[in-house]
Length: 221
Ligand code: ADP
Ligand code: ADP
Image 1 (cartoon, rainbow, N blue to C red):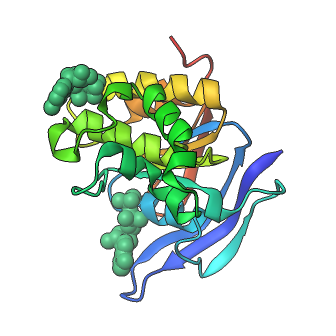
Image 2 (image 1 turned 180 degrees about the horizontal axis):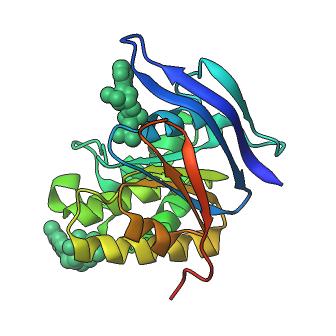
């Protein structure tokens, strides 16, 4: 069954910009879907609607799977947005802290998340001591530490060099294979979308909806 179903989603910003018009899409539970399209076609707007951060003007968004709610979503942005004054361990603790979990209780989960992203030895580092790729790994650990059913990623690796990006792509796939969250990955790289996902949704700038839904066979090396 689909985890997320979008029907006829439309969004016009106050300025009059039509960001989305009539978007239909489904994402299966446990799937890995990419959303690809030119800059400004509405990809971020669509992710924000799925996350419940903004409300569409038209259409319907449903979460047919019981227990899954927008509040449980993990989100990774292009900017890792780490707290610069806090150590890696405390950055990853944040979403558990916001749920009322004391650090001592959270620590095993924090360390597990850090080991999974390859940063087991960097728990006590400060963000400024880390490379761009490592900061992104912390951001992924922070998103996954709550074991969300859905991970939304908005051009997460776009600012990284190609080698770092390819390594992160592979490590993200390994995380997805072991942790089995549903993944929606926004990118403007067709190459990256085909490499990562089992389905590529192609968005157009005119009209601003999904123009193609492509199944990728055996995308994994
Ligand atoms: P993408 O992620 O594909 O680059 P966005 O969803 O960010 O596209 O933007 C879609 C369109 O909506 C663009 O024309 C953008 O300028 C406009 N837009 C995005 N956010 C806002 C906003 N908060 N207010 C007004 N216009 C916006
Ligand atoms: P990746 O994102 O694939 O981890 P990076 O280019 O971010 O690649 O870093 C490569 C490796 O170099 C890291 O895994 C880490 O071991 C090491 N490294 C990078 N920056 C630092 C740093 N500031 N302090 C210690 N080790 C670092």
